[in-house]
Image (cartoon, rainbow, N blue to C red; front, side, top):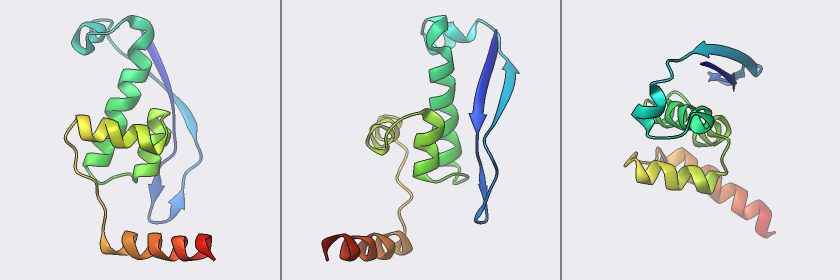
Length: 104
């Protein structure tokens, strides 16, 4: 089975353009994930997004993008996997500033 995926990573405020990579995966992964073969791509994207977010390598928005989900859907997925949100005081300050601009 060949799995193709587009990825864009952020490294210290530098964006790397999305590129497609191809990975050979054993068909048995469908049994590991307990899914149909046609759903394997989605399951692998979601797992990768969750683990990269858990490790602090990507932002919440990037996790949603990799998983091809909305931010609300990625919130639900992270909660289901018991992954705590990485929300820091700087994030709160930025959100407050954004709200101030929107509410003016």
